[in-house]
Length: 227
Ligand SMILES: Nc1ncnc2c1ncn2[C@@H]1O[C@H](COP(=O)(O)OP(=O)(O)OP(=O)(O)O)[C@@H](O)[C@H]1O
Ligand SMILES: [Mg+2]
Image (cartoon, rainbow, N blue to C red; front, side, top):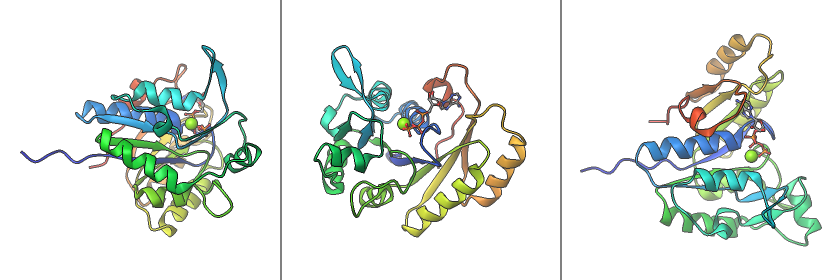
């Protein structure tokens, strides 16, 4: 029997707060439903809250909750900073240099543990990691196809097309994109969606409605994994 292809990817977004975590968790559920073992990875997280006596980041917790296997936390989230600020600034404050090489080593170990590794970036595609590398370099180092989450709100056309160009310029494959309806009042939603479907060089994996209570299982039901 021919093994089903794995589906690992790097989830980026048009901005911070556009639904990368929701989509990453949904992709974990969708991959699991296809029969893959899955694990989420948040290489760099900035912003902690005290949960049961531990400083935790909600993205990391959401990815762990959506993963089918349990992996060491230091692999799932190699870099964690308290302040919810740009990662390279948080790292400088903590006298840490974020290493793309170290993250790639952690990813390689996760890829040995699960068939599908869903990696969530931080912020948008060109957010700096350190003085010379950004999130896009990290996606390159991990050799992953990219899924773009478009936060559907005014301004998203420009952000989506700039991001698609940046992904292409880095020699990476935009394997699909998700229209996430974060603004239920967005004027002319359907026309904006149609514009993106024409302009973006990748298939629309699904449209997420505005959820009163966002839920990764419900979001997974709206997505189709790339072939
Ligand atoms: N379709 C949706 N309907 C309603 N709320 C949503 C939807 N998508 C995302 N949200 C909410 O918007 C907020 C930001 O979403 P999320 O945390 O997934 O974004 P993100 O891109 O991962 O952000 P970050 O850059 O901080 O990692 C969250 O509170 C989330 O629950
Ligand atoms: Mg997130």
